[in-house]
Image 1 (cartoon, rainbow, N blue to C red):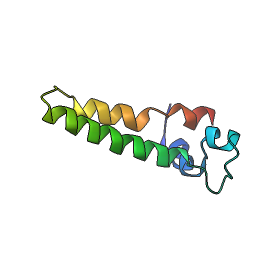
Image 2 (tube, rainbow, N blue to C red):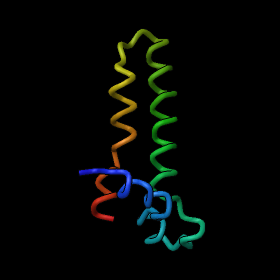
Image 3 (cartoon, one colour):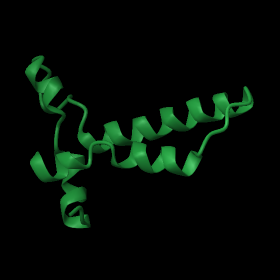
Image 4 (tube, rainbow, N blue to C red):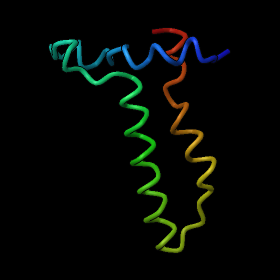
Length: 76
């Protein structure tokens, strides 16, 4: 189960892909930054699609984008 004690450390957990590619940990994107960017991008795409007449469940999209990497809180 996800709880606050597992989520808060994600701001200090670098994304593994950056480290594998040789990006120093100090410059690697962390999981929290990634989640925030995914939410912003999801919102912008949803807004654009809505303006084009596509029916969007924005709440569902925001929840999915917020928690899409939540398992990293459990698996690191």
